[in-house]
Amino acid sequence: MPVNTVCMDAISLLKHQIDDSAYQLEKCLNGFPVESYDTKPVASGMSFREMTVHLLEVYHAAAKMAKGEKHEWGSYVAPELSDEDMLSALTSLRATAVDLLLEAGDSGIHTASAFIVGHDYYHVGQLVTLRLAVQPDWDSYSIYNH
Image 1 (cartoon, rainbow, N blue to C red):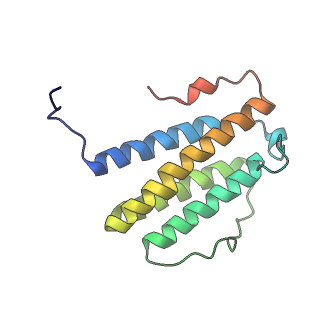
Image 2 (cartoon, rainbow, N blue to C red):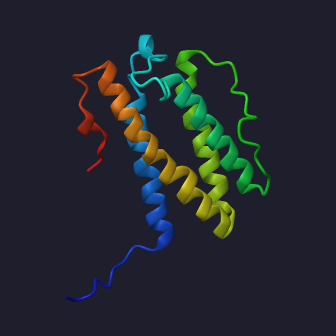
């Protein structure tokens, strides 16, 4: 089988995955019923609100790591945000973390791959399940951008 001579480089692939995981996250987060933010269909799982705060900590930690700082997990205190402001804060902090990581060289690229792409996709799966539990008619295939 001939090898395709037009290949995406690693940075382009990473940026594509960062954008794609952001798209999927946004599809899961946007329009989530506010009255269900604290619902836990699985007792040991996270609610929508808990997952959002967790993602805020992950993006905060990733931004610190991009600057060569260490993060003490569990030390993050989320800012007091209204339900309406929570998602915009998450989007903003994620974008900041991504920018810093992509500027940080190889270590930033490795962190972006694990903490942004891998971790976001992991939580997309949880958010899809959570969203279907509280909104059974929600179109879970809407997360795909292709």
